[in-house]
Image (cartoon, rainbow, N blue to C red; front, side, top):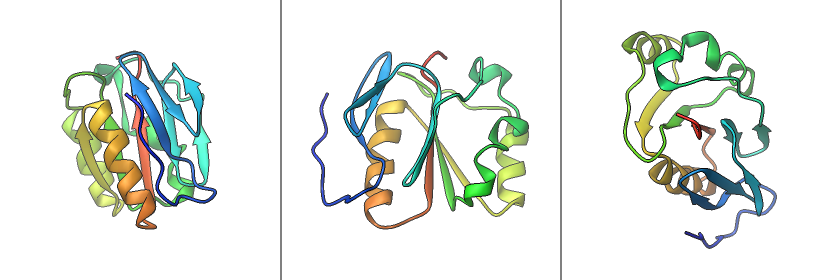
Length: 124
């Protein structure tokens, strides 16, 4: 599916997605990735949702996101509860959804000027 851009200026946004990839500003990524409006962490070394830990989100904390959207592939899978509790204690919201919904929601929040991060698990 292709998404159409609104007025995003220089922001990193999802311009497409598929079952095994996402497209950010017309560049295809087929590995796990974290996207923020002004930065991409394209070497997110997460093996799977079952092995996801609080430490896996340390790389995004310096960017001070308000909310992290966790895209878990074509189906909804929830991470260990301790991750959700940890993020809430840090004052960061976390929402879990399938990757397609994550891409759409991220674009809306980024367009609103929110400090959002989309953590995408491609190889879940």
